[in-house]
Length: 85
Image (cartoon, rainbow, N blue to C red; front, side):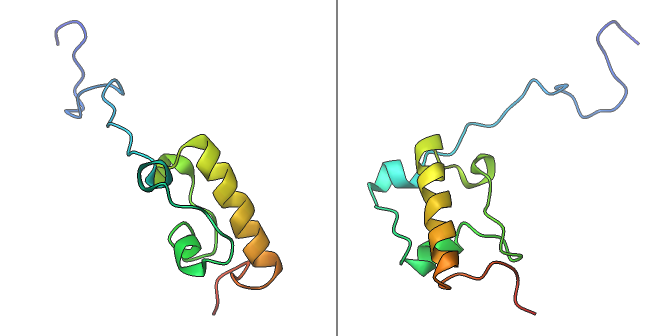
């Protein structure tokens, strides 16, 4: 093997990264409201966990607002804390 080559065929060695998705709330200028259950469910997994921002594509500010909105919606029972069986 030449210097710097690896036999795994995957290439890149972690140097390649995909372009980040633009924040949905920054692009649309849409407000985040804890009463909008349909919007909040898009950012929850089937088990009821909040999707991290590296997956959802939200910016830091909107991810924080979204997290607070989900927690408020859980407190008044608009969104469940865990999966329904």
